[in-house]
Image (cartoon, rainbow, N blue to C red; front, side, top):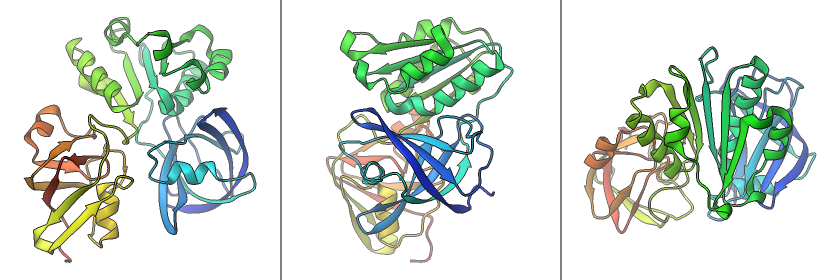
Length: 322
C-alpha cells in the first residue's frame, strides 16, 4: 500500500491509559509494514471541516492491528477531542504507515528520551531494540505518576532499561549525564515538548557528539509563548487573514485559498516555510527544521507550527495562482 493511499478501517477497542490519554486499537482493511517510528494519518472532523491528524504507532502492527495513544489537549485544535469522542466500532479512514523518524539498528548503544505523550514512538523503538538484544536506555518524564501512560506495560517488557521521572517528585532528566553515558557512536532518539528538544540539542552539541546521531520528533503544539490569535498579511495576494488560537498558520492559509506545499505538519520537513517580509510582533519558532541562527534572523518560518505573539506578520508564499 502506498504511503499516500487512504483505506477504510474500524476502531476495534479503546482504553483509558490516564485521565486524558486513550489507547486506540484500529483494525485496517489491509496492513503494511510499520517499522519503529512510523505514524498513521487519521481522517478527523473539526466541526464540519474534514482534516487529518498524525499519530505514532505503539508497535509494529504484526498482529494485524494498529495501536495509537492520543492525549486530549486542553488547547486542542479539534483532532484529539474528535478522537476521544469515538466509540468502538466506529468507521475510520487511515493512511500510511509513514516514517519520518526511523530507527537505525546496529549502533553500539541507544538513548531514548520521552516527554509526556512523546512516549508513543519510543514505545515501539524500545520494543524493537529489546527484541534485537541491543543496548539501550529509555528515560521517560511526565508531570505526575499517573501521567506515565504505558510505563507499567514497558517495565513488564523491558525491565530496568526504563527509568521514569516526574515533576511531582521534583526530578528532571539529567540530559548531560545521560548523553555522557552513551557509548561512542551511539544514537539518541527523543520525542517530547519543545523545551525538552531544545535542551537535548544543546546538551548533545556541548558533548561534542555528531549532529547526525541525534534524532527527534516534536509535538508541534508548544513553544516559548502562550498561543494567541494573530494576523497575517500577504500583499501580493491582497489578503489579510486572522489566525485563530486553535488554528495553525498553515490551516488558516489553506482555508483562505492560498496554495501551500506541506508534508509533516510537525515543523520537521521545512516544506511549508514562507518568507517573512515584515513583523510587528514576536515570532514563536516552534519548529526543529531551522537552526537557532536562522530562527534569530527571522527571515522565514514554518507555517505548520510556528506562530506570532503580540501583533501580526507580513509574508510571501510560494503560491503564484493568486
